[in-house]
Image (cartoon, rainbow, N blue to C red; front, top):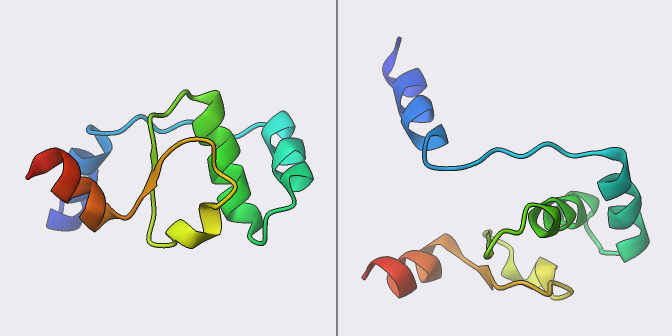
Length: 80
């Protein structure tokens, strides 16, 4: 296993990777967000009962009912 694969394997063990389904796609479309991928990530986070969303584009999640953080702000808030 090369170094990149090892790092990906380590990181993936820290997170739960959740699937998307047809209902989430419909809900993401109905949300009417500017970015469909953000809307789909949001729907997936809601269905998975995630505590927050971590993204580089916080402003794209203004519609979010769950907290949205940048990686920098999240690490400062919870790991400082």
